Image (cartoon, rainbow, N blue to C red; front, side, top):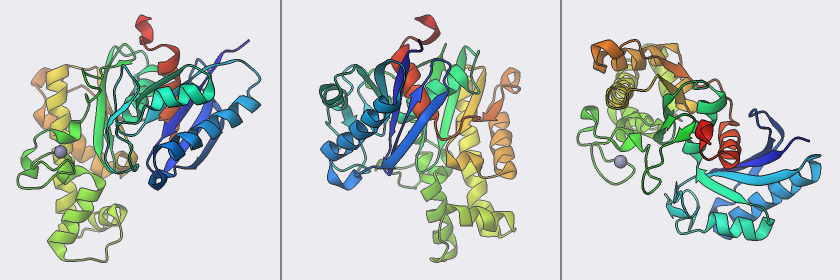
Amino acid sequence: MTVLCIGIDIGGTKTAAGLVREDGTVFGRIEAATPARSGPAAVIGRAEELVQRLRQVADDTVEGVGVGAAGVIDPCSGRVSASTDLIAGWAGTDLRGDLEHRLRLPVTVINDVHAHAVAEARVGAGSGVGRMLLFGLGTGIGGALTQDGVVEMGRRGVAGHFGHMPCKEAVGETCSCGKAGHLEAVASGPAILRRYRRATGDRHVPDTRAVFARAAAGVRAAEEVVETASVAIGEAIGGMVNACDPERTVLSGGLAFAGAAWLEQIRDAARNTLLPHLEDCPVLLSPLNGDAAIIGAALHHRRPGGHRS
Ligand SMILES: [Zn+2]
């Protein structure tokens, strides 16, 4: 009999869940809107509904639930210790305790980017690799360092906030965290859009994707904003690789897939920053699809110690 875990990915806009086998394959995947404005009880209620639906279709024993959630998660207690206002009132939520009480199943909670990194390290681009760096590029910039399939979470679960490293391209720019001069302030999707609008006065450009389209069409202001972002990201990757010596770096998140030219700019900037004997350390795109956080949360639940356990 196969033993299954349920993985759940609780994000600011949607909650997705699936049954996950030991090899990381997912089936029965379902998703629903996250009632983010209705508060934590509604959000947890939605996750509970999805789990109960999956338990009804699972032929085999479900041994537990792994959650990957937005926000800073205390790795010991499974509580949300800090959060943006993506989900109203999310900080302070006892996510693990509340879900275990509702489900009568063991629950493990980690941050969603950390969950993505676990999946990548165990069954994705970092499979078989001892040490891996992950950069998640999107609305924010986060990431993780993994060793033998285990995420280094840090003392408070905060490790991997690469978007909040100082960055010379971001001098004078205010970051989403309120401090100035951080990578995310020039290189996240919203930052690229904001900087293009500011440079051109064009209020009608609808989204970050449109800025990339203008850059591809040779619009100079768009090229400059995109190049600044790519160089800032590449330099941050290079600095982290120099500091941590991983075997490879994996890029994930919607912004990672903004095109071949963008990827090459990031790789060039990383190479220019790397110590000479680290220049061949590869920067790869994530091969996993949008299920990575579901997979990683479930695999982490099954074996928190990774290959070491
Ligand atoms: Zn910041």
